[in-house]
Image 1: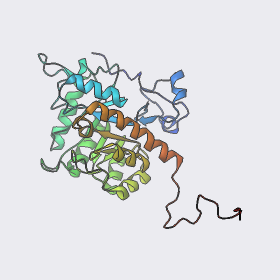
Image 2 (image 1 turned 90 degrees about the vertical axis):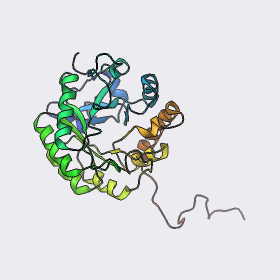
Image 3 (image 1 turned 90 degrees about the horizontal axis):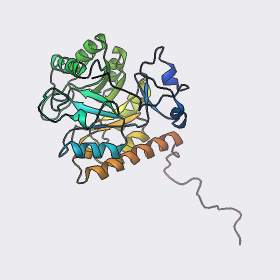
Image 4 (image 1 turned 135 degrees about the vertical axis):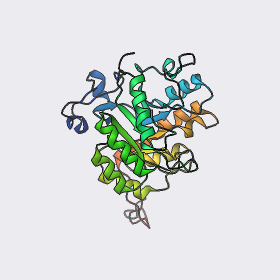
Length: 295
C-alpha cells in the first residue's frame, strides 16, 4: 500500500497558515485551490471541508460510506482498536469503502486509557498505513464519562511528537492544558464541548472562546455535538472545525443528518466570517424609521 494520497486536499498558496510552514509537506497546488478561499489547514495540508467525521456505530460499511459522502468530509477518523483496516485479512476492511486515495484517514486511539497504549496503537496505525503521520490522540480517564486524562494525554503527545507524528489532540476545555499541548507541538487542539456521545451540545462556550483566542493552531470541537444547531454554534464561536461521529451515526436517518451537519458547518463558518450584530438589551436603533414619517 502506498502512503495516503492527499490530492483531495486543497492548498491556498496565499493562505497565512500555509505560508507559515517552511516545508508544507503534502500541500497540493492547482486550479481548484483558487476557488476555495477559506480552506482548513492542518499540519501544512489544506482541506475543503471543516467537518471531520468518525466511522463507528453505523450498521455496516455501506451506510458508513453513504453518510460520509453526504457529509462532504475530507478527513475521516478511524478507531484503530475497533475497526479493521488490514489487521484482520479475512474480514471486510474499511479501506475498501474509504480508500486513502479519496480521503485523509485520521487514526485515533479511542479505547486507550494510558499513554503507553495510545502510543502503541498509533505506531500500529503508522505501520498499517505505510508511514501515515497525521493522527488523533485521545487518552480517556474512565469508562463512564470518557473524559480525557490530561496527564496521560500530555505524556503521550510528547512521545508521539518526538517520534515524528502530527498530533491532533482531544482534551478538556481547560485553556492552560490546551496551551501546554500546543507548546509541545500538537498541530490541532480538540476540546470537548460536552461528554463523548452525550449529544448535550456546547456546554462550555466561554472556555472554548478562551482556547480559540489563545491558540495559533486550529481548534476543533471534538465530542458532545447532538444536532446541526450545535455544529453551527461551534463554528460561530470561531472553531476551525468540528469532529463528530455519534450525532450522525446514531441519528434515526444518518445519511440525512450527515447532510444537515455539512450545511450547519458551512452556515456557522459564514456567520462567523460575516460578524454578527452586537447584542443589545434594547433596540436603540430600530429597523423601522421613526423620523420623516408622513403625518
